[in-house]
Image (cartoon, rainbow, N blue to C red):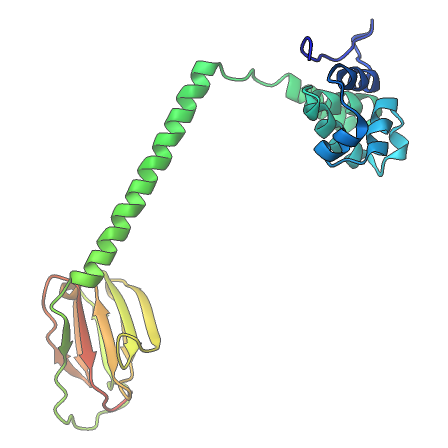
Length: 246
């Protein structure tokens, strides 16, 4: 298609937007129907850009968007055309933005850009590996930890005051993951979260409970006011049969 397309500059170093677009189009031997299909911009707007009749376009935002798209499609620097339009037709803020952008720190050299991309890629890789490892540990603890379901004793307990009834789970030695569902492991979820050391949760047992403890060694449990020995140093799930509710 000939030499690379470059804007045409006059003596004042301000290039002619429309003429440079037109010359680039003619060098590439493109017609408006083809350009309309390639840029998705109506042909009459493309002609307006080349004629610099910007008032015939819907507004400044459209002008700048069309300029960038059309120039880029012709192999030119679309941002350069937007900057030139801002200087000649834009507001003071747009002119100041252009000057600030031009006076900014130069772009990093190719070697620096390659190092930065490599560093960013490594950070993303290690983050993904870390997430995968944590996910695998959680799944393993859930599927293989503990000794299976353990039925807590419930030998016809005497009626107790509602303030002490039900199942009380308290973290005494450290934090633990606690999941509680109604009836079974597929029942309605009543609680899921980390039970911090020194805090407790109480649950009614009218429909029975399924309880999962991530760190049972950190937990003290009471069923209707009676201490229940949990024990074990691995994740464990337990079943509380239906009984008096708090």
